[in-house]
Amino acid sequence: MNILIQIGKYFILLSKVFAKPEKQSVYYKQIVKEVHSLGLNSIGIVVIISAFMGAVITLQTAYNMENPMLPLYLIGLGCRDSMILEFSSTMIALILAGKVGSSIASELGTMRVTEQIDALEIMGVNSASYLILPKIIAAVFFNPILTIISIIVGVFGGWIAVLATGVVSSEYFIIGIQYAFIPFYVTYAMVKTVFFAFIITSVSSFHGYFVKGGSIEVGRASTKAVVYSSIVILLFNVILTQLLLS
Amino acid sequence: MIEAINISKSFGNLKVLDNISVKFDQGKTNLVIGQSGSGKTVFLKCLVGLFDPDEGSVMYDDIVFNKLPFKAKKKIRQKVGMMFQGGALFDSATVLENIMYPLDMFTQLSLQEKKERARFCLDRVDIKDAGHLFPAEISGGMQKRVALARAIALNPDYLFCDEPNSGLDPKTAILIDALIKEITEEFNMTTIVNTHDMNSVMEIGDKVVFIYQGRKSWEGSNKDILDSSNEDLNQFVFANNLAKQLKKMSSNT
Ligand SMILES: Nc1ncnc2c1ncn2[C@@H]1O[C@H](COP(=O)(O)OP(=O)(O)OP(=O)(O)O)[C@@H](O)[C@H]1O
Ligand SMILES: [Mg+2]
Image (cartoon, rainbow over all chains, first blue to last red; front, side, top):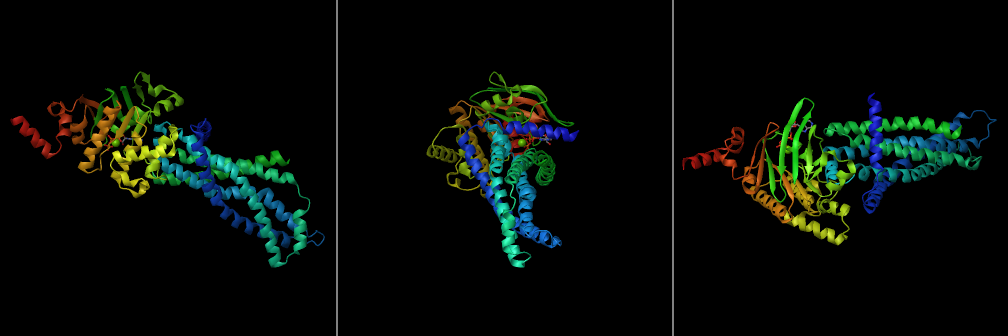
């Protein structure tokens, strides 16, 4: 029952978020700020994780291919498709849910308990729209870039692993990453990324925006933001996969 | 003019406001006084719509404010300035940006004009030089004054101040009181100020409403307050020894 009330509140908040902005120029400024804090600041972690994941996927694929009948280019292909299909979209989204989600929830939660949100409302500003919409827009447009960076860096990480360990020759790996490329997989990854970006920002904002109390509640909200965005991401991962790939 | 009609508000079992009716006139500084915890802040928040009263209505001139839909409320709020008890400054923006914020949002002024206006407001609360600092870098009393500067940036029609001079030294407190009274008269605002500072009451209290345990216990002007026969009010007004002795002296003569 409670969960239904929460979902209702979430959609009411969204309807406030997507109301017509008071003054567009102010919103542009906010969007630029959010692209910086939510997007650009996440590039580092995305690059590091993707490079290591690409390397590990490549090594695991190589060491698990004991059957000599399997062609060696499968290693490159496996690395590329794992990155595109699942890692760079879903895994990165889960990691961003942790990083970005908790920061959004604690930012909004602190603004709520220190009455900054009330101050906005009193001025006649639609606080939900002013604070949340730029975050959603920034993430929805910037996260696909993060995903592309992640795919490229992951494959590159795999290649470095190949060079360093010699599990397969560099040529075979490079043939592999070009072999049987299905462009639709990238579309699929992008669609997932956009959905996940929306989920991370809106669910986390929801938890931060309605905080009541003090610092403990802000902390609790930021934990909840991460947990709930992750669960919703996993749920939508299944749904979108069934819809897009079946 | 702002009018509260039979306002009641409870939190769970705790009845904070009990059937309060009072009218606040335009061009006057109206004070709401009462002990700590008597419900002043809750009352003010009901008036501005941050809390929905359980019963009763809030009138802004001839509009029933608390029954308006969200959009219509927003329109009226652009004419409202409010200074929160805790300041409620935007902590990720500098002092100057805080004051410029309402100007950014609701005026077409150029950046230069906005800065000028913000500096002018800062000057009026007597902290010209703090514009580039962040709220966390200034003292509590300065934060209050910045909050007041932000509240008056747009020359609001309705000004609400929640304890504007608590935490200020007596000299600055008098300055802030004088400023509130001055702009109220100059721009014919409807101003409502929460306070428990008797000095403010005597200085600027055109109209004074005393709230005791969530009920309106007395109302009148600051001239009548010392002669009131209201027990609770007298205990509040003459709480300290100096005031008690003054009262004794005046009744002896
Ligand atoms: N959001 C809230 N939830 C529950 N109770 C509240 C809430 N806000 C205020 N109260 C209660 O309402 C009563 C009045 O509080 P209020 O803040 O209005 O006092 P006040 O007169 O402004 O006091 P002070 O002079 O110390 O600021 C207190 O008992 C407080 O516990
Ligand atoms: Mg108070």
